[in-house]
Length: 484
Ligand code: SF4
Image 1 (cartoon, rainbow, N blue to C red):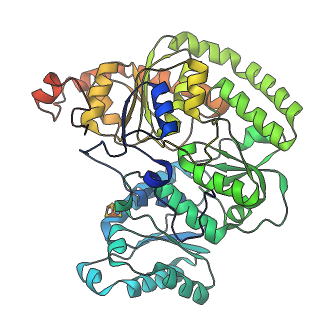
Image 2: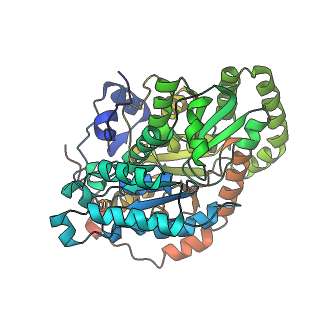
Image 3: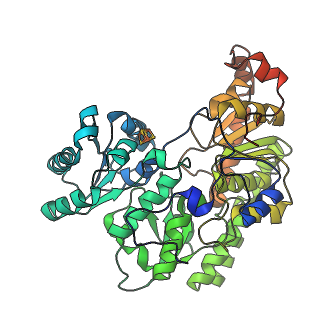
């Protein structure tokens, strides 16, 4: 059955992928139960916090060059614009640093009379102020309830202004999996901006990334390949020609398994099946697959040999520092296992892996994902949790694991570790740890973080946790509130 449906919206992850927010146990059981799709999808009956899919959709659209993103929502939904305004400066190295975001600022009366007119005026204002080449409209919970006809507004304004206007259906209340927002954005991008292929570009590789700068072009350039880096800082032309690439590589399946599967199904752009290149062997395997797909097998073997020799002395130096140190990983579903694999290459001990959600059946079901590969390479792992950042649970899970360092990707997770006196390596959006140079960079960053142990411990001793003694000391099970 085709993953892509010719509809304005893509199905949310709970329905499409059987995604869950709750699991604790070992990796083998997680994989097996996922294959049977038998994990409890509705067990997390108490949530302290969460994210919104609209924000994830914004991640993928805000940084597309010459775009304007309109939040068709109350003003508060666009709060992430402030974060982007700050983080784009960090990540934009040599790129346009302006964040062009507008909000229709929906009010109470708009929920009664509708807000299509407001949206039209905001589109006109966007064109007047910024002369964009593309406009994205992000839907919101309020818009979902009042039911404005985004398609009609977009089509009319597209004809008037002669630029693509792309509605993205990412109402936060639709899905508890905030990564559904990635799929919503990619669906809109695919149906409105990706063109029918004119010719295959045999040296072109799509690289799907969250945000941040390009960290793979140099490596792939060594085997004569060009990267089409999407969607952060990509051009409309780059997006349009995704369909002509030979293959699609990704930083993380959780981000882009939908779009890479759709490109494979519709246009024969092969999805790289090996887990993304985090750690030595995984980078080798990933490169070898790309070499096979692009007819560069020999060149890849030479590059692997050279890269190993190049980084070996420094890698050994850091292994001698980090060997046996305990790491806890807390990030997105597949990404957590990618980082855990890199950590194992530094000869550290992984004492806990927490993913923020889990897709039971990823798009493109027969692929060799990071979870299977981690199990195959390192054996079963006993301490896997799925926990959507909930601080009240994370605090217990992390305390029990007692790591030397936490490696995390999402803002808001660090403070739980710091309260426990655990140094943190924030992975952020920069994908520092990818491929050969990334492994060295990860080692350097962990080494630096470990040096903060004294100050972090000191801080933790002066912090009062917001939880009762009952929760802190009498209850052992972090999943105490789980519905059984
Ligand atoms: S969950 Fe709904 S109301 Fe909240 S930020 Fe997301 S779209 Fe806006």
